[in-house]
Length: 346
Image (tube, rainbow, N blue to C red; front, side, top):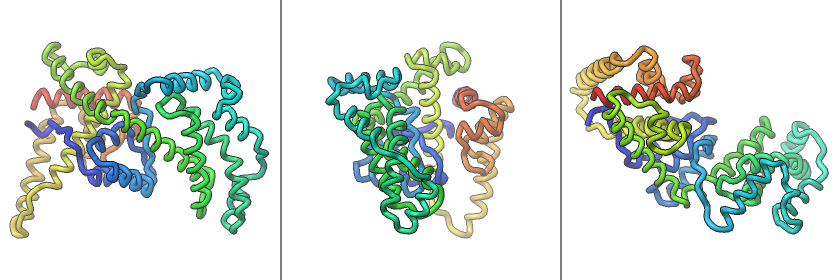
């Protein structure tokens, strides 16, 4: 196995969270894949860590799994109503969601959030209630943007409302509206992620990673060249966007695996430390340069930025794209092709 191979064994959560900056975003699909075999206590602890460091789970690449029975029908119906703009009118008159939305719509809202935030800091409890009333509409709007993704709208709205109220109680300065909205987003993303975990999405994503690598290697042999992302997606019977998400998780798993291997390196004596470090650094840099020299300049630059090969922090596809004047999709396509080349040469 060469240094570009990787393992899908679960990595320590600490090794991953240390690479995340406060206020950043983490793929929910990647989170599920990493935490698949962890007990519930560890998962809850991971959520606490994310919250403490103000890291938001991005559910955009979380597969929309299929619920069963009446729940599946309800989820589909809610998504259709939202898309058609027929919520709550399209629901039965005694439907709990309709009753709740109509109740919210009847709440009189007035006041300026910035002014109210100052009153809240001064200890005015009534100001907090007025802020809640002002922002409940944003809770509903955010929940509706997630309709059909595995959790019923009423549950999403209630979870978001609780998070909004807790954010108001915890507020101690700054942009109140932005703080409350982010806390609401976190709560809904957590609920969706936990629901996906209970439905086995983490296991499915890890299997998708295994399937992706197998197809990539098979097509490389069959075609005599590196397969495109579209060709891999077609062989896997998935969309190019879904294949790109799997490829990104594979790259992340490879990176974390390398970090873990470095952390498990044997301890050396102080007398030998400098010599070993110098030799290892030289050999590693030489090997990396040899591998990168087989790529085009653009491919080499993308891998350098994505994996922090020049000593910096690894960059996301979005940040890499900004550096190189490319879209995130273009970055992922070139990165996938570059890694396939390296595996072929390894």
